[in-house]
Amino acid sequence: MASKQPIGYKCCIAGVLLLLLASVAALVAVAVIQDTWRFKDYSSEYGIVIDSGSSRSTIYLYKWPGEKENETGVVTEQKNCRVVGDGISEMKVDKEKGAKSMAAFKVCIENITKAIPAEKRKTTTLFLGATAGMRLLQGLDEQRSSEIMEDLREYLSSLPFAFQNASIISGQEEGLYGWITVNYLMGNLLEKNTWNKYVRPQGEKTVGSMDLGGASTQIAFAVQGNLSGPDYLPVKLYGYPYNVYTHSFLCYGKNEAGRVILDKVVRESSDPNYIPNPCYPEGYNVTLNASHIYNTTCNKKPNNYNPDQQLFFVGTGNSDKCLSMVKGIFDFQTCSSTQCSFNGVEQPPVTGEFMAYAGFYYTTKAIGLEGTSDLDQFKASCTKFCGKKWTVCRLIVFTWKFPAPLSTHSKYLCPRPLGLQENNGT
Image (cartoon, rainbow, N blue to C red; front, top):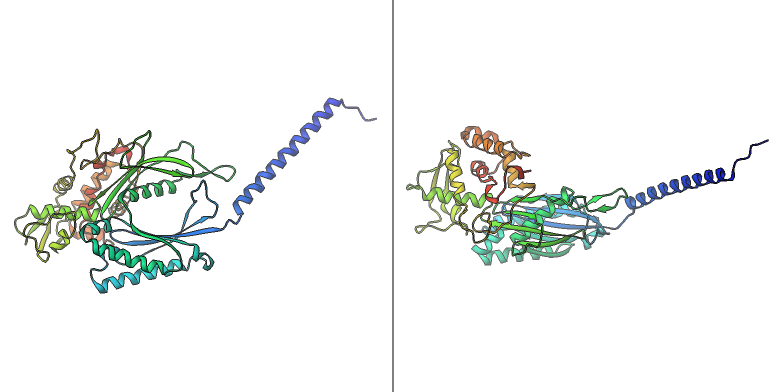
């Protein structure tokens, strides 16, 4: 005869079984929802961005799900193509050279087009953003600048894409876009939670951005509070607001700053046929036309300027003197605000970590220091590198198009002018 169980015991067992079944059902539901989100075939969107810098143009293809996260797309890069040749600011200088530049553009466009499904090409947005090289050309030759941009608009609008615009972006925009890119790639703006949904990362931590281009350099970082002014840009990303300080220093890109330093070297010499240059390695000698130095708004032309005058530079490899000359292109005295970076530019206190890229990376890689965040090690390595003779340097940096000015570039990378300290580097 079976033993009788108390009614309360049976109810308890039934409750446990119901709870277990509910838990299993919940787990199954979570798995199904995650799989649905993971594999749901939202219609993908494509976009093409042409980044036209002072020294080159690169065409990028991006893709994102049709469903956005709080009005901002979750973007992935699909492909990129570097246009062979100089930046677009060199177009219309020489007819044959300009034709080659446009042909190189078309090769990259064809390459990118093949990666886009045919049915998506009509809705693929296309933008071109020109940066500091064209900003400089605008000041030097506005007509040529306008003609270059108009030619590009005409060509890009003929392509089977949803062409939006080709424009010369401001230095502020360039700095802000760099800041967004860095923090997006580092996962500081968005991350996935347990439910496979995108959420804002805990801590809301972002890093500052330092971009060294050929004609300008940009700094950008998020600030707290209600700071406002011409260099503060509010931006909303994935539904969350940020206040970003961003400033672009025109003429402080590695190429233009190099020209400014060459001007200082020329003015310190009395003989154009023998100009000692402490920023060139010992044993490196080169003849440059005066136009190479002065065909820019970054330098004031001398009274006796002759664009065809030949100037003979002799490298002396004097690291200390080179550093002194580089420091001389920064004005730390002028400041009408409570705090400035240099040249009288107001800048709030710099805190937190920074990510330096573009010219910062290429130069440090050439001297074997990529990834370094120790400022003392960085400075010591720069000094050691700049003391090497040209016979050694040419073996180290043979991949550079213009390797000799590396000493100038490495000295120029000192972060002090922007208010960074040893613990800010990344």
